[in-house]
Length: 182
Image 1 (cartoon, rainbow, N blue to C red):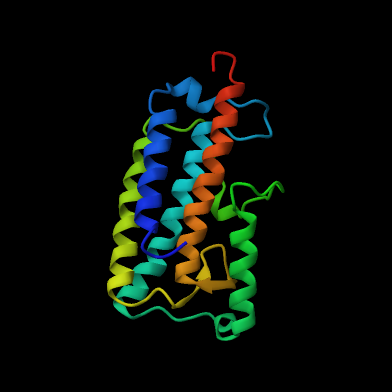
Image 2 (image 1 turned 180 degrees about the vertical axis):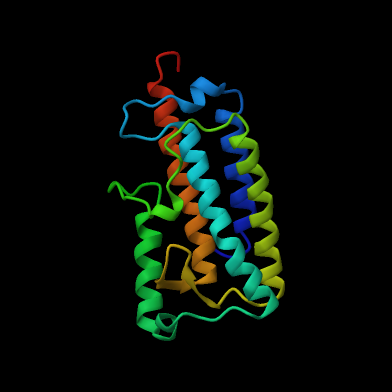
């Protein structure tokens, strides 16, 4: 995805989530098809945690205090991890992947305001993208918030965030469709 499209894609993702899940009540948000799968609310919480985990990294990039992880100095690693993770989070990727603990949603019921919190975080992400573009930081190498050993370009991180949201939107749609009153 070109860097000109991230904000548009995030706005489209926000609109889709709002349209599809904006009228759900607490029990619908927290309904699970089975105990081992997430609810729509947990999907939203996971996406919120994922976006928020990049905020300190981006803040440090913008103020000049970010230190690239050692792995980030190895170009093949940067390219490998970026392509691998981006491929894994594509909406059409069939393989189910387990998330890192830092991004796990709570096992308890999520609050009714989780969608509003997620949509607010989308605005933060759009502003971060704009600031990073203006500061010329898109080619900077960053460590994943889950592990500094996993590195990729900031531009790839934004690609990952957008694709990851689309993938989980489809997951949340399947959960909603499986609800007895869905």
